[in-house]
Amino acid sequence: MRQRLKLVIAYDGAHFAGWQSQVHGNSVQDHLERAFQQIVGEAVRVHGAGRTDAGVHALGQCAHVNVYPNRLSPAQWTAALNGNLPPPLRVLRCQNVSPDFHARYSAVAKVYRYRIWSGTILPPLEYGRAWHLPRNLDFKVMKRAAAHFAGKHDFALFAANRGHPEKDTIRTIHSVSVQRRGYSWSIGFEGDGFLYKMVRLMVGGLAQCASGKLQLDEFVAQIDRGKTAGARLAAPAAGLYLVRVRY
Image 1 (cartoon, helix red, strand yellow):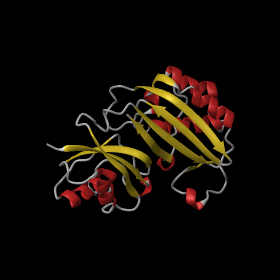
Image 2 (tube, rainbow, N blue to C red):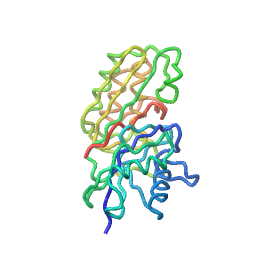
Image 3 (cartoon, helix red, strand yellow):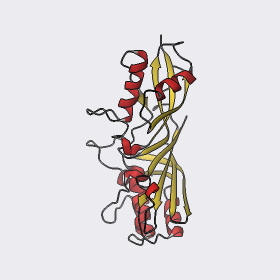
Image 4 (cartoon, rainbow, N blue to C red):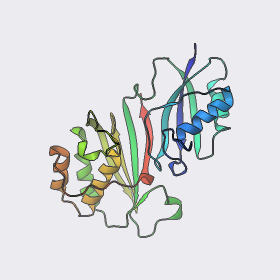
């Protein structure tokens, strides 16, 4: 009988090829599984709450793994794992959970944040951490446009093709926020689930609206009636953060 361990993880996505295991072994999942193998001496599968793409950051990604009980305390697991992980990847905390807990299927909501820097010059410490979009963005227009995402919609137009069609493109967005401080913009989304590249396509549409490249009524039609107006724009991965997973 094994004990199920829940992990809360943070990482700088610029250093990894996304969450999901890759042949070259430089995904977040690969590094975590190697760290467990170093500690327990056998292969262990780490199950994540969701897959983040290459370049996407995480402040509170969640995962679970089955380990033999009484081997280490949660605090000892945290220390041991971090001792075997590269510095841009850290386990923030561990806890023992019920065998029924599943990092992906037990989740009820996810919170994402997207950051934009609208100034002419991108500060060096923002490189790889925000989308550099040196344009005059209309804060009020972006906020009005973002409000239309709230609620239950068919987000097929805000999803990229993973190589196979999505069976269900209906999602519920619980809340959307737009904040600005100087040139720094932060757009927050909380929803019951997100499709492949959904947040990045949503932000791309908001940026087109706020810069005057797309009229607000045309954008609303994309959300409400599934009608696209011209080519879609996916915001770069570097500005996206998985903030937390709610259970």
